Structures are given as C-alpha cells and as structure tokens.
Image 1 (spheres, one colour):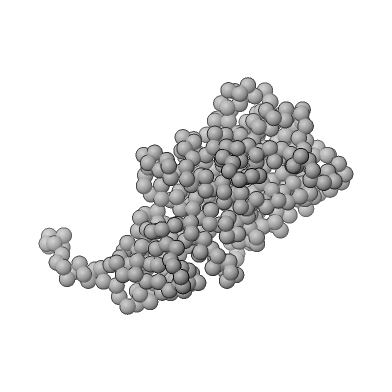
Image 2 (spheres, rainbow, N blue to C red; image 1 turned 90 degrees about the vertical axis):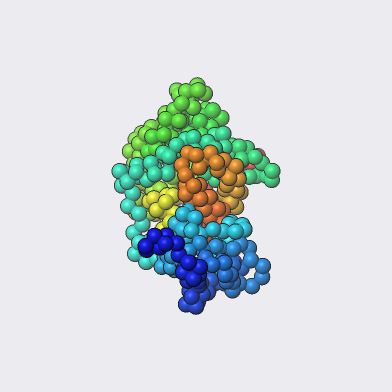
Length: 410
C-alpha cells in the first residue's frame, strides 16, 4: 500500500527494484575482496554479476538492496545473519561455495581481518560464563542432537581407519583409539574434563575396566549420561559430576579431554595445566583432543555469537601454554583434520534428513543457521582453515613411555 492507501504503480515498483550503477560496482568489489571465486551473484531484480573464471560452483542470491549494504559493512558476521534470515540464498552447493572462499583467503595469506588485540587476550571464560556458554549450545535439547548424532551421542570428530564405516562404527573407533593412546589398564583411575553425553566415559569403563570421574557443566548432558550409566549397570564405575574442570580434585592415572579445550579460552590454559598437574599421579599421562588452527587466529564473529560463545581453537604453539609451565611434555601429536570433515558430512546428511522435525522444534531460522554452521565446518576442515589435534602428554621425568606406536594399531 502507498502512503495514502493506494497500491504502488509499476513505475514505483521498478524504481524500488532497479539496481544502480554504484551498487553493481559494490558487488564487483565484494567478489574482488573474495579473490574472484567462481561464484555468481544474482541481485534483487534478477540481474546477474560474476567475475570468477570457469563454471560457477554456486550462485548467491541477494533478496533485497539492504542485504548488499549489510554484507559490505560486516561480511564476516552479516553473511551468516542474512543467510539465516533468508535474505541471502545459495543456489547450488553451499559447502563448495564456502570451500572456494576459504581457499582464496588461505592462498592470499589472509586472516579474518579483526584487530589482533582480541586475539592476544582471547575469551575470558569464567566459571559463570562457562556455564552460560554451555547452556547456549548444549542445553537446547537432547532430542535435537539425537536426530543427527550417532547412537552414543558423540559430538566430536570420529575416526575412519577404513572407507565405508558407518558413523556409529567410526565413533567407536575414535573412542578405542583414544583409549589405546592413553594405554589404559583395568582398575586405573581416569578423570575426564568435558564428557559430553558420556559416551567415552562409559566406553572406557565397559571396555577397559577403569573407574572414571567425568566433569561437565551442561546440566542436560550430565542427566542424560547418568541415565545411560544406570541403564548399563556402570554407575559404580563411572561418576558424572556437574561441575567445571577447574574444580577437579583427587589423583588419577590418566586425564582425558575430548572436545572441551575449544571452550576453555587461551587465557585459561595455565589454569588447565595446573589442574592436570595436581590431579595426575607421578606416572600419569593424558590426551587432549581439540579443534585447532595452523596458526593463531580467532573464531569468526558469527560462530561465536550464534553457535559457540566463548570458543577458541588454538594452534599447537598456543597449546604449549598448557604443558610447559606445569612440567608436562608432549609425547605425540596426530592431526585428524580430514576425519572431522568426514564426520561432519554424516552429521549434515542426517540433519537435512531431519530438517522438518528440527523446524517443528525451533523455526526456519534455526534450521538455516545450523545448516550453515555444519556446512561451513566441513569447508573449514577440507581446506585446512581448521585442524583437529590429538595430543598425548605425560610427566617430563616418565621413562615408561612406549618406544613405538605399535600399541595403537596391533
């Protein structure tokens, strides 16, 4: 309706949809800043713009003029927001589009362009903030995660020692690999920092006969894990504790953390190292499994705001801040980057199969937001933007370490 209740005429509609010459130039600038990827852009009036060579892997559709200006002002954050709101559509392969953008950024030596002061400091994840961050991501409902995770509810990188493994088998293979790397023996005491829904703790108890204390600040995850332990008759071997890793007490033969370091924050690595030092026995050893980087850089603003508040993925050099001040030494490092890409492909396929149920639980914006998160994660691992480190460590004076890796594979 017009100002006086009249319908706008064809000329007014044409004026509103027309693309101005400066706006065409701005679209070209966007593509140039992306280093000319093979991507087309369709504007709100149907006009097409492309600058890359070769066939386009996807087409980005801008639904309105405001979407273009928001994208120009803050591309890192606004692409995710506009896609979630449906003001940007992607026709074609979303993962391939994001891979092309990542490759060009990496080949150009680009960072995400944010001030380095924030990188030097990193997120401050206090006890209260750590709990709030967990509620934001993990306490949105176990029913949601059941739709697309494996039967054990493992929400970390799986391990694919051979092609064709199901997600369930690959997650079991990951847990077995972790146990072998820690050289577990029956009767030993293990502490787990950040246990998720309890799959690894229960596997260690069931398969290796160890006693486990598992810490987690997510109320929903702990309640779920306790129910599983009771159902399997393992409550006497595994204790799930709703508390922060900083409050771990007691002495243990092994320390393990799978998928928690990303939530610790670089400023707290010294605290984590001190916790490990005080809780490990003289011959104790441990493993940290974490998303990482090939060099220091912060997590992008959209992911931190909408998916993982307080998150930080460290480089190997930054992880040294956990071990060196506490007299711990790195024994081995394995990079499972491509295994995480394979894991995420399984998750994304299952998520898409369940998207109508997810929409009924939440809304369309939530579906689009999580589709983008899972797709962007695949692209980040396939292009090397993200890494996946498994780091084993022990006391600097311990001579009981294996001479070879034979125990991992026999």
